[in-house]
Picture 1 (cartoon, one colour):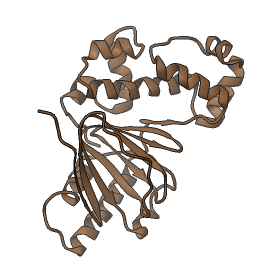
Picture 2: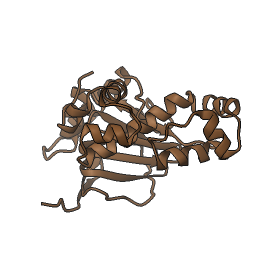
Picture 3: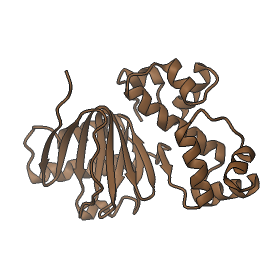
Length: 253
């Protein structure tokens, strides 16, 4: 049965149940907040790029940061607004963190039906921020290139993540040498071309898995020669295998 779009919002957070393919308009909030997908997969689009948020990740969005969301698969989206005193302990830019088992349970409690007094809510907020500080930022954020030549490369590979062209071949298509593009990837995005392309492919894979495609098909569509190499790359970035991810398995810290 299709999931109907539903929302419950209150001053400290909210819950959105979105059917697959639903999107929000671009918007901002006066307070910084955490976004978590208790089910399904979210892509969160900000001025700095796209973050894909499966069930073992949580994204921080600072106050007044323009963003919009898209649901891949029927998605249970949870939002937790942080008070300014705790928001100051978080990055000044959007960031993706591992959602430990404890962080996940705190988010579900803060956005659940249980009635919490102000003191209990404040204590849970502190625990949640402490948990995020214990984890490193996670590589399911795909930074947005600024240079026109990098943007052109990004469009080519976003349209066809299975494209296995070398950087030199892509450079011929966008009018830039391989060394120039390599330097731009390092200087603008803080990673090599091959690291960036792997992250792009994994981001596409997360979306396809949420849509119900099997591992073999996802591996082929995203440019891996065989499922085993896809599983290894996916596990290295997401922290769990594609099979466990599709089944809803969540790793710990």
